[in-house]
View 1: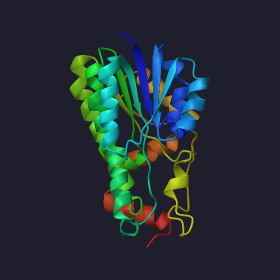
View 2 (view 1 turned 135 degrees about the vertical axis):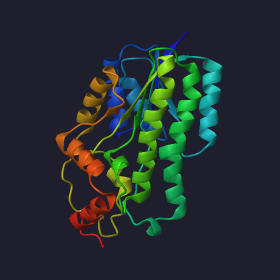
View 3 (view 1 turned 45 degrees about the horizontal axis):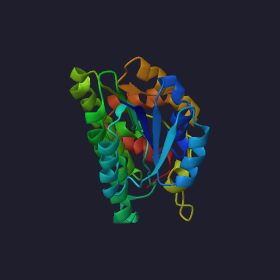
View 4 (view 1 turned 180 degrees about the horizontal axis):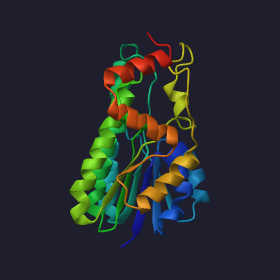
Length: 257
């Protein structure tokens, strides 16, 4: 039986960094990399240390789940590693964002992760691992980054609970919670025609830092992976302080009304 790794959102950012450093997780007979942009996937596939299949899917569309499920049914591989990195955000007031954009964000950030996990887990055995990309934003309500933060809260709690459910099967789930990370994420999240929501970034990390820490935490069996003193400090304060105060501090920091 062919042992494979599956990586979504592999065309850029954290997903691409996971793909490029995949040898740190072991050896695979084949790697399936999934994203919308086939040209980028094909370029990445040529540089991979393992045989790699580029699969162009838009995981915000529910039909893509069935395409993935059908491919699994046909190939019948053993999935030893699933990494869910697909997602996007919008930095904008909820009511100033088109409803179809907000719903698309929920579909990609939440529904796609649930679908990818549920379709993949039947093809996993003891020792398999799942990595889901959540965010430091998961720990607090964030006005003007509202829907994105709420979706990442879903990912965090879904991942932690799924980890407990699958423990009896020897399958581990880790939620990776990046802080601000320098990727193409900002190309889509920021509306350049409007005043920026985020005016102050207290720290900015790189995909290399986030993924390097994630590999270490996954190897240790950690439920949550988080890189950086600033990220951990902010998360701790968000747990300890009333969320009303946390939201007010955020809005004052960013000069939001």
